[in-house]
Length: 244
Length: 282
Image 1 (cartoon, each protein chain N blue to C red):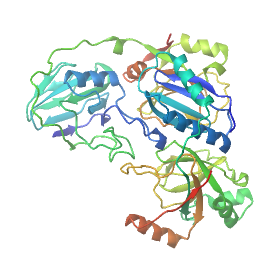
Image 2 (image 1 turned 45 degrees about the vertical axis):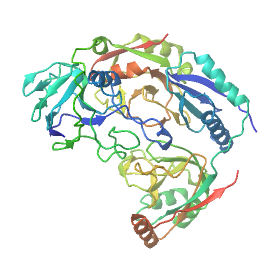
Image 3 (image 1 turned 90 degrees about the vertical axis):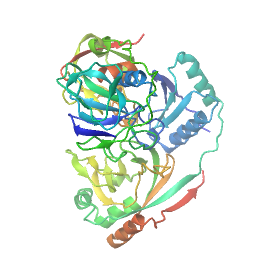
Image 4 (image 1 turned 180 degrees about the horizontal axis):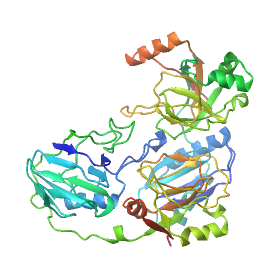
């Protein structure tokens, strides 16, 4: 198990930020999620929640931290002990996406610019397996790693006021799904009928940090059919458990 | 029930917000000024987390359909019951049919109206705080009927004026801690942050406050990381963005300072054009 040089920083009166080296990698993510889980399952009762991003966790306490050195020391000890924890089995979610021009309004322009035809772009995008690093920006918005370098494409200079719910898009070196209608500057290549955020559900997002995503191209007829099944609560999202 | 006869600039129901759902990318939300909202709840004997109505700059008109107790706190916008002026930070008995309304804003910017037992609007993810895409609506509308508790009022509830610190509205001092990227700032910028006054910009809202002043910035952008309400980000164009209660859970701009909880409450009461000064917490 790789050990990283972590830095600890008092973030607010009630939180401590732990930083890993400033790189985006799945190896670092594994260690971030392992330590997050260790902290969550530790006997430090005052810890209210732990959140992660690419290379950091924010440990939130339910009181004002009086002695920051003691709390940091306790976290350092936990990291050094190298506990292995039972983490929830990771899942690979198969997400149907319709890349039809009626949804993928930027697909044509992107293909031209990237020197690909539409089918090649779609194959590149749906042929990869993406890792979910964390959720942020909007409720249920996944920060995904693993976009093919051939599909790197700059964000729009002027963001759109309205991007549709379910829009699948590319911005810079990232790809993602807009879980709800929102302003946004990414280039839209398709749309998924899957709901990524349901505030009323006991589990508001089915996807968790560490899970994987595969986009599967579907026709517009299939898209509408899936939409109908979702509306009637008859659709079963394809999912596999993954090892490791 | 309480009927909303008229809304102000922005009225919403808020409690202390949502903790433990940031992993889903859901903001905290909740009252901007927890100090004033909790004061109102404490005067009524409510739990600190009881839902109140938060109004910005201008108060709503509310008609009470049952006898109850209310308390108005935060900004002073000359509250009135049936057109008779009433005091802030005091339990006020209202009868069925009474109307709470407000006049001109005197000081502060967020007005809190608390009711005995708290407003009983819908609970989503353990909170009644209104927020786009989480609750059904993100603000109150004229004609809304908000359920309230009809439990008999506890006669022992304090009707006295509690000690209230006017410095909450009068002081310009905003206490901060150093943010994770503070040490990367140029030396003169580090000192400038604490030397010059900053002016609250008119683009400020529940998500973030901005200031009119620009700072020279040569910090590199960073890999998206975690932020909290009270985090001050420095953008590549030298803008300071002070995140507030409705902020996103992650951000990619360097985090140079972090407001204390009390500083967030105090800033939430500053009007556009107000001057603030950052003070480092010792």
